[in-house]
Image 1: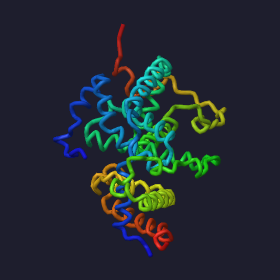
Image 2: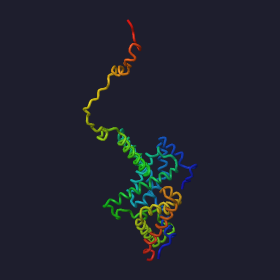
Image 3: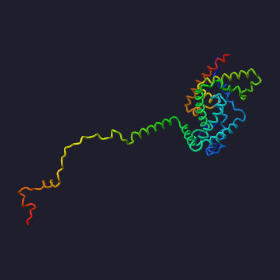
Image 4: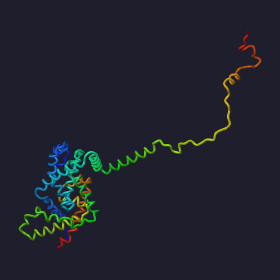
Length: 197
Length: 130
C-alpha cells in the first residue's frame, strides 16, 4: 500500500504530469490502481458488468476532477474516496430498481481460479468445502448493510489500515472500528448455521 | 458453533486474490480512451460548460452546498427587502385642503408700520425744507 504521508506520495510525479495533460501518466495511474479498485467495486456490487461500468465512470470522474485535486490527501486516498462514493451511490440506485434480483449477482469467488488454494488442490473434498464456504461468505457479505460491507471490504479484503479507511470514508477511526466490530458479529451469526454442519 | 472473527477474517483475506482476468486492464484502457474521445465530440461549446458546472457541483461537499444555498437565499431575501418599489405604504395620505387663506402682509406695509409717524417727530426726523 502506498505511503500516505504528505511529503512522500509516490504518485506525485504521475499526478503532476497527468494534470499537465499527459494522458500516458494518467494511464499509468489507472494501471497502478485499477485492479485494487476493481476488487473494491466488485466486492461491493457482486456484479462484473456493473463493476466494469462503474470503474470506467470512477476513472472518468478522477480524470475530469484532476485539475481540482489539491494534494491535501494522497492520490490513492482521493481516488478511493471517489470509488467508494460512486459505488455507494450506485448501490442506492440499484436498490431502488425493482427488477434487480439476487440471481443477477455473480457467485463471485467460485468463478475465480486465483482463489483456488494450492494446498487444497490435491484434495478435491477440501477444495469443494472451501468453495462452499466462500459461497456462504459471499451471501453473508450481501446480508450486511452497505456501511458495514464497505468497512469489511476495505479492511478485511483490501487490507487497508483503520486510519486509511477513516480518511477514505471521512469518519473517525473509532467509528470505523465500531462498524467493523458489528459487521464481524453479523457475519458470525450469518455463517453460524454453516459452521455447525 | 459460531466461527471466530479470525476464521472469518482468514476467509475474507482469500478474496484479496480476486482479480480481473489477464489482459483486462489493457482492454479497460482502450475502452477508457474510446469513451473520452466520444465524450470530447459530444461535449463541445455550451455542453462542455454545462458539464464543467455539473462536475464542479458534484465535487462540492454537502456542507458547502448548504452554505452556498443559504447564502443565495439570504442574497435574494436582501435584494427583495432593499429594492425600491412603489408600495402603497410609501404614498402620503391625502390631507384635506384648508380653504381659509391668510394673506401675508405686504413688505411695504410692514416698513410703513415700523416708521415713527407720531406728531412729536414731525418736522424733526427726516424733515427737509425746500
